View 1 (cartoon, rainbow, N blue to C red):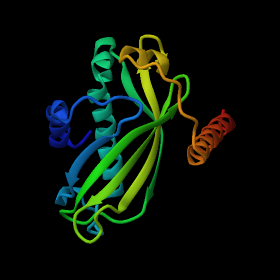
View 2: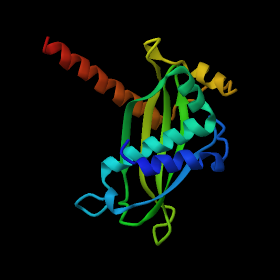
View 3: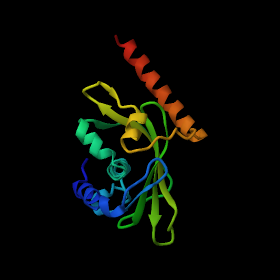
Amino acid sequence: MNLWFRLIWVLLTARGRGRLVLPGETSLLSFRVWPRDLDPSIHMNNGRYLTLMDLGRLDVLVRSGLWREVLHHGWTPIASAITVRFQRELRPFQRFRLETRVLCWDAALVVMEQTFVIQGGPRDGQTAARGLFKGGIYSRKEKKFVEIARLMGLIGVSEISPPATPEVEAFLHAEDQLKQTGRASSQIGT
């Protein structure tokens, strides 16, 4: 996490944004593109999107009450796969909103959608980038991912996952294929 001031801001202002009820509610965080976010093309660096996505997922954990349980048990959030589709550039000093929401889950991993929406100016409301994230909460003590049903139970939620959309299915399939290719490549070298 290389955005300490933004991290502290997200944590200090979480209470003011209110409790987030999972799985249905969306985290909304507003930001501005600062000079340190830029790449040589004078727009927001593609790596910065991934870092800001961390903050969106942290906001979901904190405001849903899951962060307290993560800290209490010594668990750690782990990203398993992320894909991002860049649609429009974010220029210097442009205001934008990061929307983060849970789409679906399996036994131990969740899929979230994270969308960067331009705020203000002639492109107001347009999507700058959209990402899909797959990950979970890992217990080093148990050496496995914590079951989603257990996590949801800790915050008083007892819902079943909504069905995966075709785009989520495609994302999960591509991630699985990449994982299989990685395994096959590592076995060739042994």
